Amino acid sequence: DAKTTQPTSMDCAEGRAANLPCNHSTISGNEYVYWYRQIHSQGPQYIIHGLKNNETNEMASLIITEDRKSSTLILPHATLRDTAVYYCIVRVTGGFKTIFGAGTRLFVKA
Amino acid sequence: EPEVTQTPSHQVTQMGQEVILRCVPISNHLYFYWYRQILGQKVEFLVSFYNNEISEKSEIFDDQFSVERPDGSNFTLKIRSTKLEDSAMYFCASSGVFADTQYFGPGTRLTVL
Image (cartoon, rainbow over all chains, first blue to last red):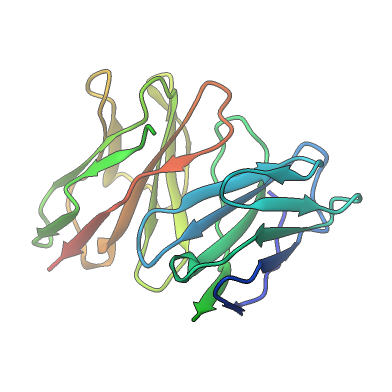
């Protein structure tokens, strides 16, 4: 699995968009970009994933650059409950393990 | 919305004792996983299970660990003789027929005294 690089921590004001960057310059053509988050010590929560097109769901948007070497997770209107560690992961599909890094600790402040 | 469930939420045991952690994956999922997270550290992969056999395991998953799908709904992780360093959150996950997105359970906190 390709390695990802994320900032250690970020702050965001409540109600504003949170933009979390991720670099994955060694990503392979068959690897997807996945985002999970972990609130306190709860189980990792799936947010969104994509291959090369931008994706949007009820939780977030995922913007992947054309060369696929980086991506940004966007939480459009962050709330206090979005305070969590956000993990950017690249992996192939097919039942393989998910490798978690240290992630980005997002603090949403009132 | 379907979800992975785990029991118990917290297990306390004495060193050397056997523990069984239980998971109910999402119905009709075919791939099952166990991960663990020691306090303050990263989430680590332990094992993946498909078609009633282990498909991949990490170096952490030694002979003290075993997994089983005893019936059509449960997926268990057994630690034969617990050690202090087994204290951690244990997460079960499952994924569907295309084995793409893994969905995680809430975890079991294992405390070994």
